[in-house]
Length: 174
Image (cartoon, rainbow, N blue to C red; front, side, top):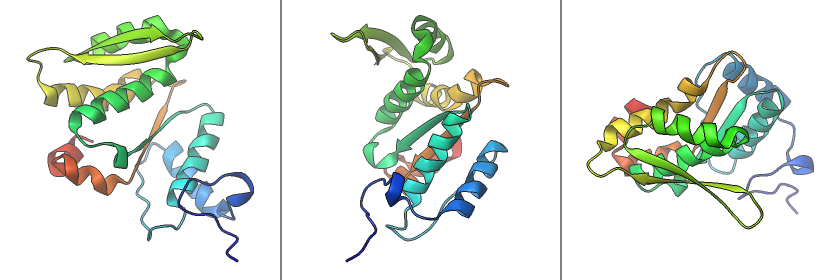
């Protein structure tokens, strides 16, 4: 019987012996460099990235993970990516919504609360807004929110799926 789990992100006892790779990934990302992981399917790349992001988050970085399998249009990317960033900044909810309104042209951020008092972010499009400019603003948002104490590390999983979104021009923006 195969002792390895696959097909989903693994953690804890199911995450096996990637100490050297994990260290190299973290060191590369801490240095502000981009990184591409390439291996056949089911080799544990996503689990390795999740572990690295969790450890980097514990070290004080803001980390985001976005799976491109869930992205089917530029608009969905803009909304999902913006929402992830907003949720990372939710400790300063009102200030975050105002800051997003200033930094991202073409969308209007809004905030609501569920029955338990948890914040929920949503965005609506401004009629006639240039979506390419909005996309650029959203992509640059972590850089605009960064400072010496507040650094961001972003992971895009299944990045090859970008081809569904007119990948060449979209990829150049990233």
